[in-house]
Length: 461
Image (cartoon, rainbow, N blue to C red; front, side):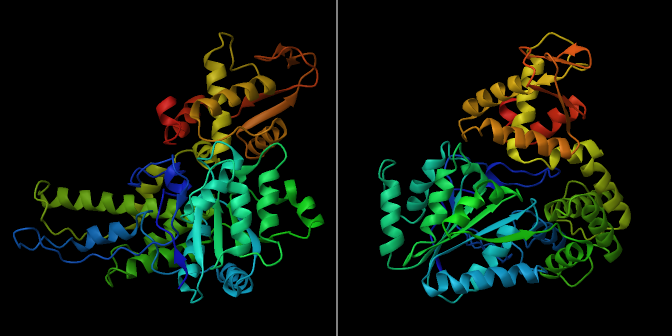
C-alpha cells in the first residue's frame, strides 16, 4: 500500500470552507500550515465504555445517518466517475507505481469529487510509494511550495535551499513519491516560474516524482501550457463535470445504505434534492447539506409531536419526506443571486471584498457609478496583504478574474471614455481612457452575506 505522511493541516476545503449553503459543516479552521494527508477513514460507530465501566448510550440510527451525511465524512465508496477513475488509475500505473515521473492536471467545480476520487484510488493501489497533499492557498509566495513539499515528506529544509534539495530528492529518493497540489492556481505568479519548474521536475529522466495539480479553473493550463509543450512536459488533462441527477441520487443512497437498510429518507425526497442540486451547481456538498438539514427539520417536527424536547435519550426515528427536503432547499438555497455569489472561488470573493471596501470608503452615490478597475485592483492588493494568506495575482490575471465574474452575471464591465461611464465619472478613476469600470449586478447585502459565510473573510468584513 502507498505510504502517506501524517497530516500537517486541513485541506483548502477545510481551511477556507467554500461552503455556500452549509451551516452544519463542523470543520475546524486552520490556514497556517499547507500540508495534509490523503488518508482518511469512513466513520464507524462502535460501543464504548467510560472510566467506571458503564456502557455509553448507543447513538440512534437517526443520529448515525446524519453523521454520514456530513461533509467531513468520507464516502464508503466512489459512485460513478468511471471514466475519471480509469484515467487516474492509468496515470498512477504509468508513473509512480512504476517508479517513474509524470504529471496530471485535474480541474472541475467545487464538490465534483476530485479529491475524494484521488483518495480512494490511492488507497486501492497495492504499489509501494509515498503520497502527500500540499494545500497551496496558505502559501504567501509561490516559491514557498518547494519547502512545503519537502516538509510534507518529513524532510527538514530552509527556504533558500528548498528548490535544490527538492531537485536532488526527485532524482535520488529511495521510494517514488506522488505530490498532489490542491488549489494549484494559487501558485500563479507574474511569470509562472514555480509551476513551470514543478512540472519540469516531474518530466525529468529518472525522476521519482509524480505530480497532480488540482484546481477549479478549467483554463489554468492555457496560461502556461505552450511553454510546457515546448519543453515536452505537458501534463495529462482531466476535467470533472458537475454531478448529474443519477449520480447524486446514487451517492446519497449509498451513504444511507452504509448505516441502515430502512429508508430514513424517502426515495422521492432524495430524487427531488438531486434534481434541484444538479440543475443549479451539481455540487455534491450542497446535496449533503440539504439532506442533513431536512433530517433536522423532520427530527424537530417529530420531537414536537411527541412532546419530549428535553430527553436526549428518546429514540427519534421520523421519516424525511418531500416536504422536509423542499423546506431545506428553500432555506439553504436562497435567491439566484446568492447562488451565483456562493459559486465564486476564493480569489473572486477577494475581488468582491475589495469592491465593498472601496465603496464603503467613498462618499459618492456608488449605486449609479462604476468603480474603476485600476482602483479595485489597488484595493485588492491591499486586502491580500492584510490577510497574509496568499500573494496577489498580476493585473492581467486580475482582469481574467473580473471577466469570469462578468460571464457569471455578478458584475458588469464597460470601457470608460475620458474617465466617464454613462455620463458619470467612475469612482476612483483618474480619467484614463484605457481604464474600465465595474458595477455590481447583485445587491450589496447579498455580497456581504456571501463574504460573511467565508470563514477566512468573515473576521475582517
